[in-house]
Image (cartoon, rainbow, N blue to C red; front, side):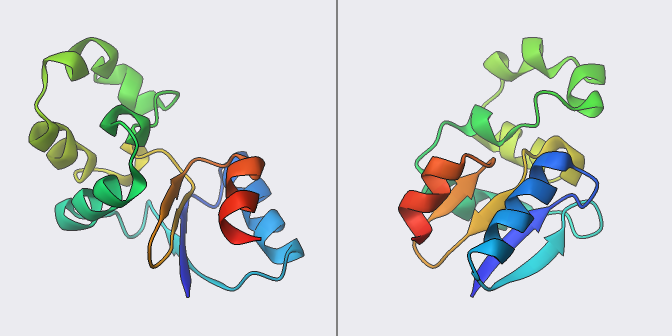
Length: 117
């Protein structure tokens, strides 16, 4: 079963969820604000995704901007970034789709199609 981690009020998350539903893909839904990912989960997702760690940050979010992370991230270690992400689900880019052997961050229909269909 896929894990669909999202923020229900996010329009991109809503679009991704509609896409999953239209394709008949089963998933377990998790609200990232109510149940934030912990450090261990984030480490595992980061490794499985093959993406740069910066891609896990919600760079358009208010919290990201208020913490001035654009300037601070380049100075931080991977561990510091992962620990920061674990402090608040709203810092994490969404949606995240976690499968047995992959992790997709953000919704790009072509990427999701390539992995799931």
